[in-house]
Length: 202
Image 1 (cartoon, rainbow, N blue to C red):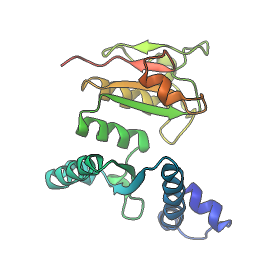
Image 2 (cartoon, rainbow, N blue to C red):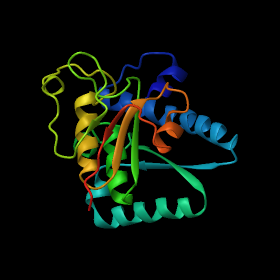
Image 3 (tube, rainbow, N blue to C red):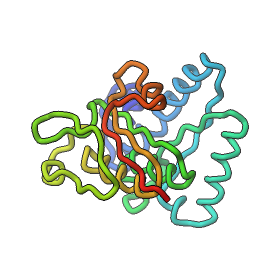
C-alpha cells in the first residue's frame, strides 16, 4: 500500500476497504518489480505468493501452499509472500506480515525466523536491548501495557507474541535492525545481534 500511495501521489476518496485495495493492487506491481530487479543482480529468480488466513485454516489450501513453496525452493526460486489485500476482509486479515511469517515458519518447520525492523531488538524498560528470551519467559510488562506501537502495524507486542509462538514450535527467532550492515549474515553465522528467542527442543 505504501508503494501504491507513492505511485498515485494523491489521496483517494473511497471507503477504507476500497482505498486499501486500490493502493495494494497498484503497489504490489512496483514492489515485485523492485524485488525481481534486486534479486536478479544475484542471479536469483523470485516468485510472488499472496495469502489470506483462510489458506492456513483450510487443509487443502494449506497443503497446496506448502507444496508450492517447497517446489519453488527445489528450483532455487525465492518466494516473496504477502497478504492478499485485494480479497481480504477483516476476519481473513493477518495482524501484520510478522504473523504471516510466523505461520509460514511453522508450516515449513523452519530452522530460523528472522524478523527485521527499524529497532535493535526487544528493549527493557531502560531502553537496553534484551539479548535473549527462553521459551516460557513472559512478555515484559512495559511491552504488555504499551498502547502505541513502536513500529509496524502490529508493534513490538505482536512481534514478541509471534516470536514466542514460533520458538515454542522449535524454531529459533531473532528480532534485529534491518539497517545493521550484513545483518542476516551475522545472525546466520551465530553473531550475537538483536534479541534471540531460544527454541523449545522437540
